[in-house]
Amino acid sequence: MLGFEAPAGDLFSSRLGLRQALQAHGFEYQLAHVIQTAYNAKGGYNTDKKAEYIDQFSLTFSQSLAALTGMPNAAIEGNIVNRNHDNNLTSSRLQDLRVGFNDLAQESWGGQSITRLGWLNFRNSWLDGRLQWRIGLMNKVQDFDQIIPCDFQMLSLCGGKSADSGTWYNWNVHYWGSTVQYRLTPELTLLAGVLEQNSQAPTRGHAWSVSTDGSRGLLLPLEAEWRTRRFGLPGIYSLGLLYTNAKQADLYLGQSGGPGALDPGGYRHYRDTWFLYTGFNQQLNRHADNANRGLSLAWSLGLADQRSNKSRYSTSLALRYRGLFDARPNDWLALGVAKMQGSANFRRSQNFLNQQGGVEDHSDPRYAPLPESSVNAELYYRFKATPWLELQPLIQYWGRPGGIAQTSDAWVVGLKTAINF
Image 1: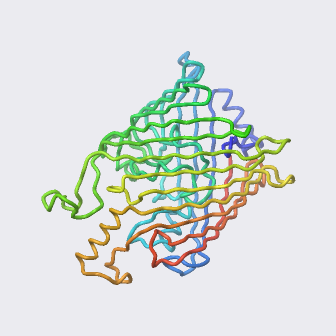
Image 2: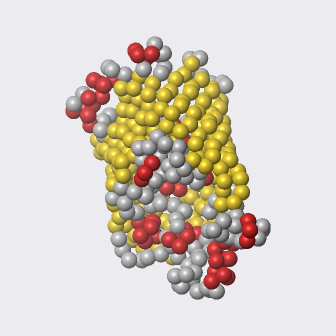
Image 3: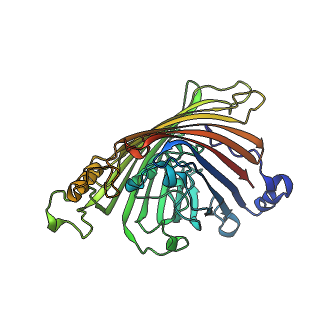
């Protein structure tokens, strides 16, 4: 519902019958290819015009174990992602890399051209599906913060905000763990887990590794998900808290404790950190002849511990309309706006570096820019060209990219293409 409708068809089913043959043996899959292009039409940190292109193949699957184990709901779940063309417009043109980036014009960019294991784990459920358990190589997207779809090409508008914590990673990175879901009532579900907090998980050497090398502690997520009907229409609301006991580096260089409390990199460390995330996805109207056509409103918020997170908070609001035109009932029109507020500790850290280096001129390469807030937006129209092909032209606005006042506002045009095999 609300952006998570199953694909109406796919290339292999319609032409080869492959899906039906595999389903007979308990194997379900989704194989997709996504292409994301972006061109800086105006503004940004580097105003030289450039088009960047990335693409991604993803295979998500489950194999029923009912026949082998006698457990009717047991399954093995997996995900493999192949990303290509290690380029993105945000790094090359839009944002000042002296402060990294706080958003992406192409959300599928993952920092590498690489094939990775996203997850591989065992799942089972009991009590008529009310209790569900997973264990193995996990990823947060299997259970947590999954009420808002990832349809926009801009990262800040893609799904919820829990990945902004910086302590766990999105769907093509795996880490050991176990999660449980329990549906208390038909509307209310509680989700909890114990996951490995591993800063090495996104590296190339960990792409297929089952090692715990690099583990720094434990992640303890807890989330409540409420599915209800308001105004007679479906809605889903969630509230989550992510806690980790791993050592954290305080972003404010030279903060209290004196030189003896600082590591060789200049950071004071402390134990424990937290991240709060919440949001909703509510349908506002529907067409009488098709429950999936209509307008929905989604909002999300992430609130961080700004001692160790470069962000204080990030929030977004988006409107989506499915089937605006009777002749195009499966097309989407969407508009989203996101705001990112920088951490006060990170700003103080940057200012401290400038004072230590005696640098005041923003154009000096040694200058550490002072990030504040930024506001980004995206408008797209998605054409359902065939049951298996979607074309999504889009335009993005970047207000104060990276939160740096000296970086000019930018306009980006792009095209997202999705093929379901």
